[in-house]
Amino acid sequence: MDQPPHLYEGVVYMVKYVQPAILEGFIAMINRIVNFWRKRESDESGLEVQDLLKIIDKKRLPKHIAIIMDGNGRWAQRQGLLRTAGHRAGAETLRDIVELCCELGIQVLTIYAFSTENWKRPREEVIILMDLLVEYLNKEKKELNKKGVRVNPIGRLNELPQPARDALADAVKLTCENNRLILNIALNYGGRTEIIDAIRAIATGIETGRYKASQIDADLLSDHLYTAGQPEPDLLIRPSGDYRISNFLLWQMAYTEFWFTSTLWPEFRRYHLLCALVDYQRRERRFGGLKQNV
Image 1: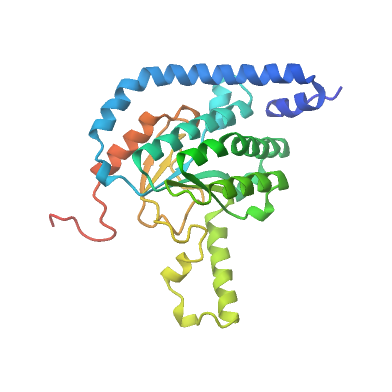
Image 2: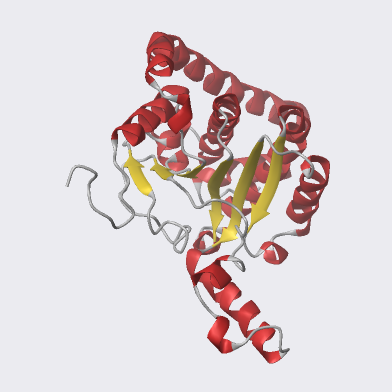
């Protein structure tokens, strides 16, 4: 029997060679570990969450929050688990953060789920990521719809595997009339490719006579981005300890406030988002102007 060459291929290996009952038990074990760890962390930070909720000014919350969900693989490695366990734990974190954004009245949440560069990862891991995307959407779409969340995938979606495209289409159709929270899921997304796609669309408009070259300005380009019609991100959050934006929302984040934390995404809790919001509200956003007291 062939042996998988890498640890994270374990799930693919089990799907191919192991009896379904054993595979189900393996997945259940991972979920129990993840849920136990999350409950422990939640219990430890519950009081702090309530304190932070009292501090936050609900009238000065960001309209649009962007999050680079980073650190799933490192979290799994530290727990002695397969990388897929990290991605599953990350999905649990996302569920909690979406719920909090709904409770707070955030208008738009954009999550960086899969970049154009992520295709460079080993094929088996890409397959697992796409399968988890389908699993997440099929499992969560009804609950997202109940919460009033509109699922809005952004990126070069036509290059995704067909099952992923089908799952996205179903979630979009189910939630298209919701307006409590727009959940932008960036898939096969790159900030540079987004700008290129916008420029190409404008160039086509010039060729067909819809636009004149003299009409090209920042507003016209913004109207052709994947996020057209949405407020630009007020706050970017990046877990995992890396201090870069990784080709994410390059045009839109000209005046975005950044908040970084060494906490890995599967460890990210309501507490961390609330800390980011408290810090955000302490800042003075000048958009290129001067301080108010100058």
